[in-house]
Image (cartoon, rainbow over all chains, first blue to last red; front, side, top):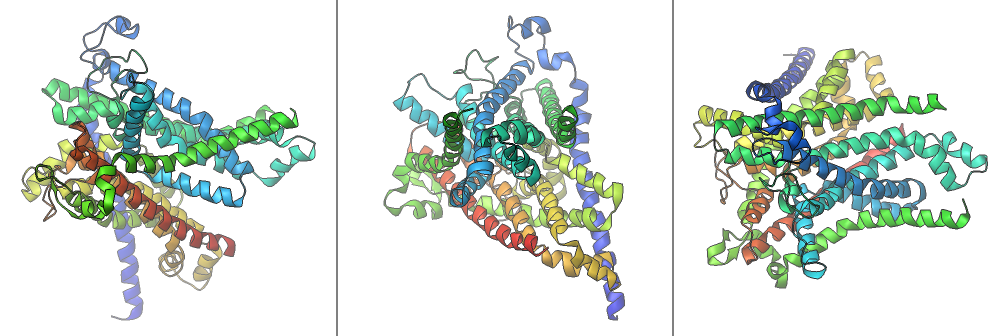
Length: 298
Length: 289
């Protein structure tokens, strides 16, 4: 075989291989989502969420839902709100510092530490959350046990590097002339930041927050070590145990008692899948559209 | 706004960055502090290399380290060619809307929750592995690594594509101008030039594979043993933490999960350093453009 025909053979081989890889990936994802929908779509009804309880009295917390996903959904929602609530102010401020104020050496050290924090497995963050709880229990208050509050703090550490990074990158990517105009017109550094730079960087920052929300909603390893339980009802306070969707799915997969419970597990998996994909899609749309809106409003 | 308040806000920004960055250091401190009785007197390496036999007073995590490496390496073995193929499909073979469409599909894949992969794995993949390979319960290294490969592939594909895109287009145009095909351009210019990006992608994916808890916990069977074949059940460091934690107590057995945590922490540190070295090389290409 001469060189030219050998080359053509290699070329054909690479093209076939790449189509094959694409087809395998596509088939696998279709199998995963298709199987989930096939087994779980029929459970999609208000009964999946509220069970046999009346939806109104469940929503007003008058009656506890025992056989539906309502407590798990409330748990996940509270968890997301709390963790994002901790992480946004600190993460945004940290990102602003890195992008706008940090000097060479400091920036290098901070960058390394954030890379490391972003790379840590979530179960390690969970373990830290648990040891923090132990520590606080021993030295601050005996009341403190693994609970909604501690989970949300641990999750906040998990998403902190994302928020810092997206803020930093959104600010650093702004064109230099946008950065200088305000300053040239006599604005102070801070005025320039709040009135010129941040509004323009908003799109990148918001999409980062939405991705962080997605991580909070899907994470199981952190909450497993910091206070989630299989059955707790709607949490009554920050210091109580709670349920969450991903943990419910994990729990049902090994502990289901009958087909009814398993069907609820499929329902929960579909619900979580759609919540995460929805957040992902919204983050994507915002990233694409927001900068133009900010400009057209001015 | 006065100069004084301006300085106060600046200090606040610094405080926020400082606190969130040094959490990383605190985490290490806490893990070591709570695992201390096991680490004292240079016993850390002993723990890494001895077997897990709590009743005989041996709290080694050697089987879990081997389990972690076996599952994640096998997953990388599946995921690397798959991701490379998909990346070539997106960046080289397909054009226009098809290329964009596949890329969007892969991006959306990163949004699929891990626990969903695990859940479907239990009811779809496990029976499949059990029937095809007649391998006991089907909960084994192979099942976990197959699912893990699907989990880490999107990360790798997107990073591969990005690193292909980063190669200055003038390099590639030179090949095309000499009458080369797009595949030749890819093989002889794009691929060799984008090696730092490929190293970053593989390292990131390996980090995800090693750090993932749920896939291995749900699909690998969790037996404490050094797996002899891909059809053996195994336990990873991450699942060991989750499982021992569930049997909550204050014993030395419980302290061993902090040894797992420290090992995972140190492993992550090594990976991050590799990524930074490769990214540094990568930066040189950016300047050469």
